[in-house]
Image (cartoon, rainbow, N blue to C red):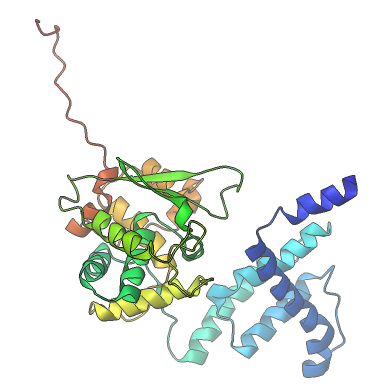
Length: 338
């Protein structure tokens, strides 16, 4: 009985999405070691576990030759290999000096093969998000409305693409103070609620544009959603995948006349970094940014902050409410008379 319970607890120690991702990538590594090496390269099979660093280097060289996995997307493949070894009590083979050096070479050859550098993922500008907000308020199209609302709320709450599409209607509360979301994320334990309130603030958003867009979708979707429905789903939809947020962002950018500069791109993750960078631009205290974005360390949040995002009226509209508002009375040498 205890053994079964231990197995169950260990199994539930990882989210289902993580297990699915690891399983596919671990199987791919196993296939490379046992089948691809002899079939494609005429080499003897190699042990997939425990694997040596040389085996991982050969695997990365194979992925580079295939040309299907960009260097920016390599980390989950390495993490899957490392995790299976750690779970079995073996040293992690997919790390170290030569792995890092090979990845640098991977980048260089990738650029040579493509003939141009890969586009860098950058934060979504607050000005773009304001235009998407206005599109959502004006459109008669329900699908465009849900795209705009999803993008704007993901920007305002620093959501990851995967966190955003998993949002259920029951996770949202409309309160006297503003809109609250019980955030679900991979860094938050499922047995602990983590509610983030975005306060209604007429100082920064005098016409209540963000609240108006939210309420427009909230009301429209009430006709076909239950508490357990995905909040961004239409009537016939039961599941949504994270990549759809990137597609919606590209579509709404086109509808509003925006194009990312040459060498840059906007993805679903650009909403998280865009919101954090907009906050930094208007001098929201870093602790507030970390707390609202559920970042646990300075190192974690710094990867999302860009000095290229400058202060703007749009940034103030979305995040001015996070700025402390306090008008002190001057302290005199003697207390005022009453």
